[in-house]
Image (cartoon, rainbow, N blue to C red; front, side, top):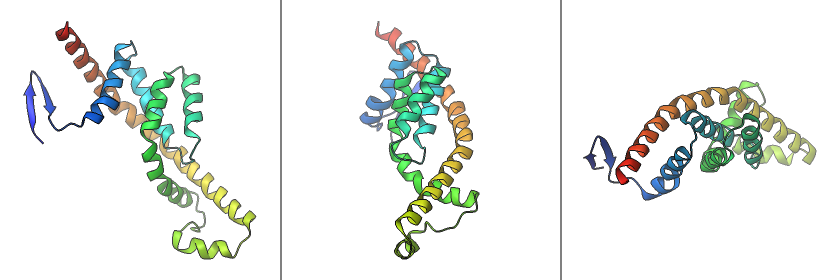
Length: 175
């Protein structure tokens, strides 16, 4: 990774164009449209936090309700939600395991014993077991998400302030 000192900023020459085009530029655009750094940071943090909810297909609705209720920028919240979709999938198993651990549930969701277990029970019992594990995973998410939201907000706010000042300086230089 080669770094070049340009003005007072250090730029990474190997920064992927994807990252700049899909993340940095839209964030700069949102900042230049008049969104405050605090609202933008909260919108992104909320989108990321709700985007890791351990039930597939529910995050878009959750983000919409939260953004409208809290009067946040809905496109920003959904932008963050869609961006963390791979993270949601990666966190499914840890949330299920944490939920079972937090709520002292049976450790019946292990992959190696699941097949043997499911052959000896009815469909209703299997659905009940899956529903219980999902509720435990949601409980684990509820316990973890406020801390994640606070940490994300605290980390994003200074980054966005820096990005806004950098964007303002670049726009002044381009005029």
